[in-house]
Length: 118
Image 1 (cartoon, rainbow, N blue to C red):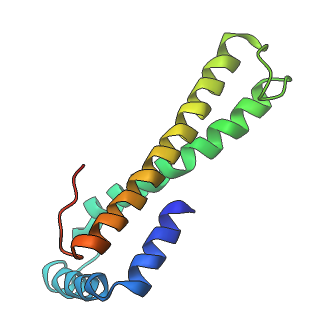
Image 2: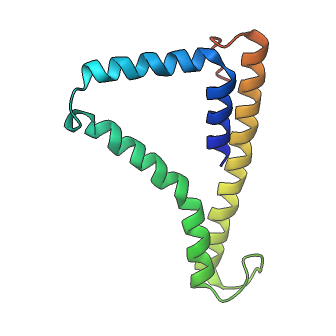
């Protein structure tokens, strides 16, 4: 949801990215005329989406594997490993959202073509 919201904002509000997307699409059509040539890219994107779904899958598996609620401290080692993984994922989401916000703020201040690395 965070990624989709950011991409929607970028596509609708920043003309530079629309122009860049159109340029990339035209180069891609020239370079990769058939679908088989695009296979490595398609596999890479599918791997990205698998990893985006992983936290939800881990949450569902944790709920199925244990009879105790997620917020409980009991349930054994495996349940605690899943809880740690889920907590780490949500912390990572928060840090990534803060990074996106900071990057957007810096680009708004210094221009869309500014490289923001830290």
